[in-house]
Length: 286
Image (cartoon, rainbow, N blue to C red):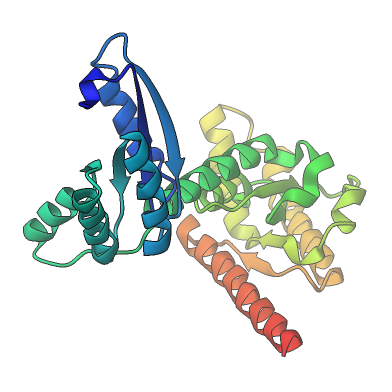
């Protein structure tokens, strides 16, 4: 019996990844055929011949069509073989593309299943990090402080916000908290994992110049305490004393540094900590 004569059609999607791509492509094709009832069954993470064989046995009984995205040459070849021997109609959505790109680039693919899903996961991780960071800018929403990967602490104009955004684009959830001489520091700051906290300091003369320039741009008086060199020096010294009292807070001097440079130093430290934790966990397992 021809597929066109069937009232109902079942599409079996086989993928060594999530199968989302194959399913959406098949659905897009089906929309071109009005009033046809189609059902989908998706098999994801299919990476053995045994599982492929079991799926094809069912497909051959019910005259289903198989649509597949499989990276492995060996497994794709096996699917093609079963399709011929068991008379199951099948469509290879990925193989021809891989072959074409391989010819264009004159190199072989990596043949690693599931890479697209990994890329998507990384993208959504970065989006979530940016959203979290924006919602926790300038000391806001400290009730969820413990969810942060990094907590930046520093006085005004030490690049807390731009550095936070830059780090969030790397998938790091950041909270930045301004500290002000004479004002109480949020108590919760001392109750979270202290290794998450990073202090930002700056040379007084550089900060004085930054604040003066800011007041000039805003058309404000430069003679107030905000840009007074003595007050600025006292603020920096007070912040540095706070950092010295909290030995577990790494401190980064942002004077004359690009955001990329400071961010790279923080990321390097975070990666070193991950490696050390991994080594420590392995020692315990042994």
